[in-house]
Amino acid sequence: MIGEKWTSFRKLIPEKNVVIVTDENILRIYGKDFGDYPVLTIKPGEKSKNLDVINDLTGRLLSLGIDRGGYIIGIGGGVVCDISGFLASVYMRGIRFGFVSTSLLSQVDASSGGKNGVNYGTVKNIIGTFNQPQFVICDQEMLKTLPEDEYLSGLAEMIKGGFIGDAGLVEAIENNIQPILDRETSLLTDLITRSVKIKASIVNNDEREKGIRKILNFGHTFGHAIEARTGLNHGFAVAAGMKIAAGISVKMGLLPTEVRDRLLKLLMLFNLLVDYHISFDDVKSYILKDKKKAGNLMNFIILEDTGKAAVNEITAERLLEYYIKHDW
Ligand SMILES: NC(=O)c1ccc[n+]([C@@H]2O[C@H](COP(=O)([O-])OP(=O)(O)OC[C@H]3O[C@@H](n4cnc5c(N)ncnc54)[C@H](O)[C@@H]3O)[C@@H](O)[C@H]2O)c1
Image (tube, rainbow, N blue to C red):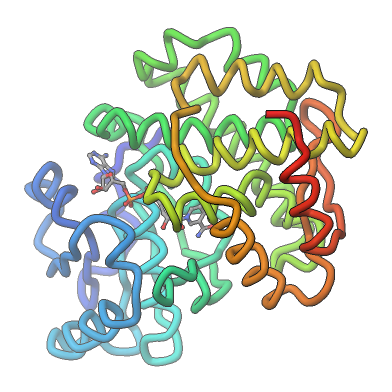
């Protein structure tokens, strides 16, 4: 429900057996309008995405007497959505859940698609489920309180969506740089709707990520390595990863340089390409870890045009060769 007032979640849930999961920032800013439901609060940020937190929340659900008919509402960004969706999926073998998605990144990406999960150490999203929420509310007014870096981080995922699936979205972003930076609500409602449509059309064809859904990972192979090693915010790491992936796509002879430059220009206009340092050994160890998960051939997402991406099967060794050689 994009463009819907966030408090309307109250109309969608039962009166009892409901619990809200949120983080401390959201509670501070929006908690007074949560209503009378019990609230479980986590510390903000990626560090909360682990099984210890799930364990702790499970104990708190039990103390509240939440049973199989229970309902969890996750109100927050991608971290809260991932945690509350996973918790609801495994608590008593699964109870109902819904999201009020509060960050730009979760509105364009994390709260749709049905993936829920937590990390194991620095290995991201390695413990999780595929399970759809009963509703997702995305209220663009809530984005006004989002810190600048978090907002820009979400824009990186929106730009990714356009480049892999909708050239019209890329054009709409290019034509509205300042209104986007000004967080104009109705424009954001339109752009987020387009982003979610791209994701939905891909996920509808491949919910369990056997094939085409993998293109949503454009920029994430190197992006995750950069995020894990440098601590760069997710969207900035994905922007860096998209720059590398587009560079490799050019080097492979599969992408015209103009399209790569178009992507880089847009990322630069939103200050998403920041300095970071990661050694080749760090990249290599991360990619080889990915290889262990995927088998001999990795799925590397390449860009073919504005609005068109593809899965490229490649060995980790070959990918690393391209990484060294690609145009920076
Ligand atoms: N499940 C999926 O398909 C999927 C897809 C993409 C990303 N993710 C996950 O999403 C997570 C990143 O999400 P995120 O960027 O939203 O991070 P986040 O949930 O940590 O939110 C970022 C920060 O912004 C604050 N915040 C959120 N909404 C706010 C608002 N309206 N006003 C003020 N502050 C607000 C949060 O408290 C937090 O400090 C990562 O863990 C990533 O793995 C999941």
